[in-house]
Length: 243
Image (cartoon, rainbow, N blue to C red; front, side, top):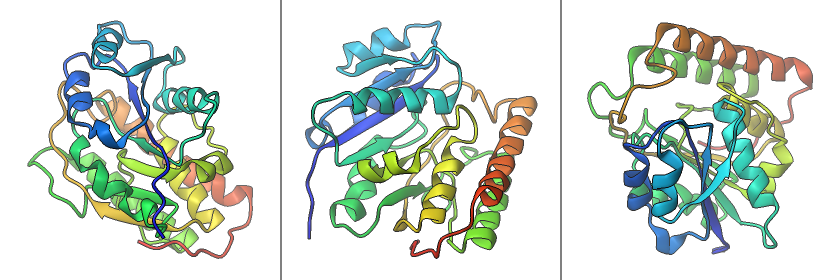
């Protein structure tokens, strides 16, 4: 059975004035209801350019990737009518926004609750996914499979989830642990999980995480910490996730 409820998009952004217009321009806007750019305290013209491209700007002054995503969620929660599906993607133009229809297809056909766009399974531009990111994905997804029994290949930012399932996960991580928190909580709750191959290219500008040694170390530590913290917090429910 096909469900064509509203699809909303949340784009966390921090100083992405060079890329945000391209991201918004490539989204299949005819399929979407609201496109929210959660401005994470940018000091450039990110918010101005995003508004000019038709996005709703939500202030997320507390720095952190997860904080921006949470601000976007809070905005959508205040709307009179809830979304059916929420899509997250980055503002640096490394994701391919035009691949959104493939990403949401398993949700529209009620084949999954959470869909992650896998860069590992898709086409990657040479040099787009740096070695530390590839190693981090391999280690983190291997641990998730070992601890939760769900096969995953990536912690990619381009993802879609049913709105009711998203609220039930009670997302809370304010920074680098956001993506893995969602996937671990989904595995723990036994949500239907799918991955679809997505394309990935070199981002516009320098990464705030993998672009520095300290950023990579902090992100890696937080991801591993989140996996084990959530494993110790409660027991693991029998998984029905699919990849």
